[in-house]
Amino acid sequence: MRTLVVSTIAMSFMLIMGCNKPKSPDAVAKDVAAAEQKASTEVANSQNDAAKDLGKQADKVDDKLVGLNNAAAKDAYDIAVAKADGDRKVALATCSAAAGDAQKACKDQANADYDAAKANAKAAAEAQKQ
Figure 1 (spheres, rainbow, N blue to C red):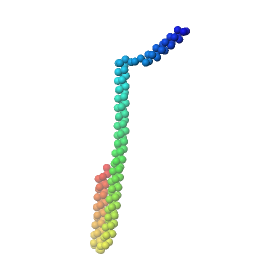
Figure 2: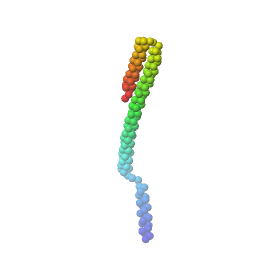
Figure 3: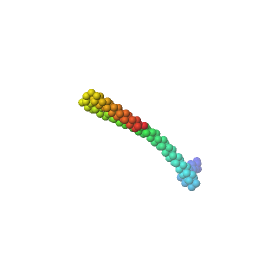
Figure 4: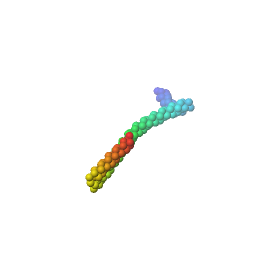
C-alpha cells in the first residue's frame, strides 16, 4: 500500500513538472505563426467592420447635408420673397403720390419688379437645392 501511495505521489510530481517543460523551437515558431495569423485576421475583420460603420455614418451625414442645403435654399427663397414683398409695398405706397396713368404705370412697375424678384429667388433656390 505504501508503495502505491509513493508511486502515485511520484507520478503526480512528474506530471506537474512536465507541464512547465519548455516547448521546442519548432513548436514555438508554429504557435507564434498561428497567433500572428489569428491577430492579423482579427485586425482585418475589425478594419472591415469599421469601414462599413463609417460608410453608413457618412451616408447619414450626406443625407443630413443635403437636407441642410435644401433648408438653406428654402430659407433664402423665403427671405428674398419677404424682401421683394416689402419693396413692393413701399413702391405701391410711393405710387399713391402719382395720379392717373402715372400711378397705374408705377403700380405696374412695382408688380413687375416683385414678380421678377420672386422668379430670381425661385431660380436661385432651385439652383442651390440638391
